[in-house]
Length: 445
Image (cartoon, rainbow, N blue to C red):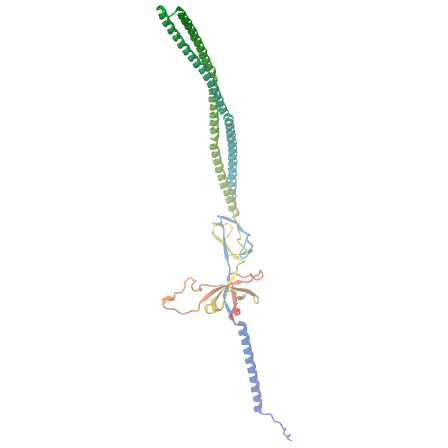
């Protein structure tokens, strides 16, 4: 028997409709998820300038010898990390050690010459000073006696002049008395002769003639007395002159002696002062010896520096690379021996399209990743923007004046500095490729 039909029946068309409606819902949900993901991706990458055209840059310090020599020892190997001052290699120091010994010997000889010159100068100074002092002492001792001798001569001359003047006055007085007596005698004789003629003529009495004769005799006696007095005065004057002459002569001789002594002492002073020329000569000899000693000292320092330079040391911290030197090799100054990749002052050079430069500012933060360290991030900031494109600084820069110009977006180097130097666990080799992401959102809002 057939079962009776139920009240509900399933239609094929209705099932398809429900499936179609469910597919639309799934599609809508997928579109919403895609839109949300796209928005999230846009939000996370908006304002970022990214490029993988970037690499780590740093300094390569070339190491060379400063003196020629033969390499006798190598203290490092390639890729070895060294500190500043670490010995890298050793040159044969034999010649430089001998040169240092010769320089020290010459310096010792120069010092001996300096000491000898100093002793000679000191002795000459002492001798000259002593001679000058003795001569000046003799001058000081002799000079006061000359005025005294001159004063003695003057005093003696004054006293003798007074005595002679007094005696001369006495002589003149005696001469005047004699002249008066002679005048009186002539007058008395004339009177006697006249009275005798008058007596013969009986004009006067004889008594007058007798009186006249008595007066003549008296006048003659006065003349004789005057002559004796004049002779005595003249004798006294001559005796005074004769007695004072030796004293004056002796005083004058004393003055001459003392003047000679002073002149001799002054000549001794001049002779002693002439020793200063010898002192100056000794001083110049000392200066020449000191100059030679200074030159010898510099030669010693130069030899010491050259000996020290036989050990080539690392100029800074870094890794040894590009080593070309070997033991036994004869090297010359400034010849490249190896290089050091310096551990400090590393940065990133990112080549950014010119169309994106307007969004970048100095100081923008930068996220740096390296394939060498997956998941590890270095942080830095923009230090500077290049002032020339890479094409211009290339070996063969393009010339747009040739007529075949095609516009190409140029790349400009941007220098990025690490906020912190790479730690020893994550060292970066110079030239390694990196990816950078420059965040410009701070000033792009």
